[in-house]
Image (cartoon, rainbow, N blue to C red; front, side, top):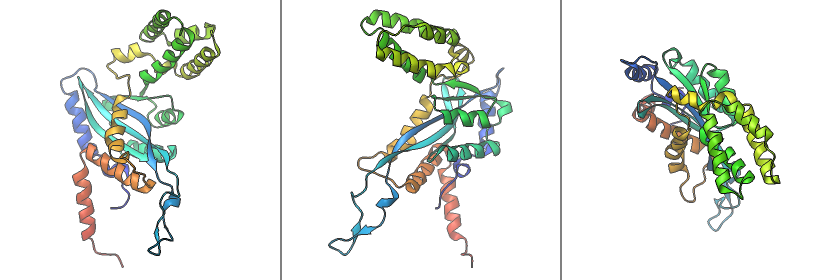
Length: 294
């Protein structure tokens, strides 16, 4: 079938625009479209595992002379927020570097699959620098949202390290701090962390990590405003996409994949969830009917 690219497994622009128009019908506000980005590790087999080696039948496959590695499958998912449900638009997951990820996202942008003037676009992800690099370059007007649960984990670490001997005090500090985030007081949370006097080395490390994580993302942690606008604040939609698209197929017991094979499977799995699998296979059947070029 050959390697599929992102546009081959995506619904067409007309179909996506029709889904968005249906959600917008009869409403005062533009519908929300979310760009969720994340990466997940998948089991990978090195290229050195290919080939054969001497054996009783003259040659046998290279077996466990190689060591498997886990490589990142970077993915993005566009979906439409429609009341209490989400409507799938586009999923794309591939093992590769951030440049390959950016190239795929740029294809979606350049093809006009997402009508940015007709939606309220937001981007959600964790603190990985490569995520926000491409969001800012390709979708600079999108509202940026730092995944609440990643942010929460840094503050939990501070509470546990600083007030571990007093669970009640730890709970009070954590709840008060999280409440400030939902009052759009992220700068106040950072100020409080800067004034905190760590009670141990572990607390010092936790406070320093939280400050580094939050200081440069203050515009992304106005969770009160995000919630009032109807935007999601968690990245669960892309994490579940990793599970259903990648993990269920690639992380079976004892499986290790060459990168080209895992990407071929991921592309087909994306086509399945994008609703384009039948079209992809029909194109493949049609290609088999074409006469060979001299």
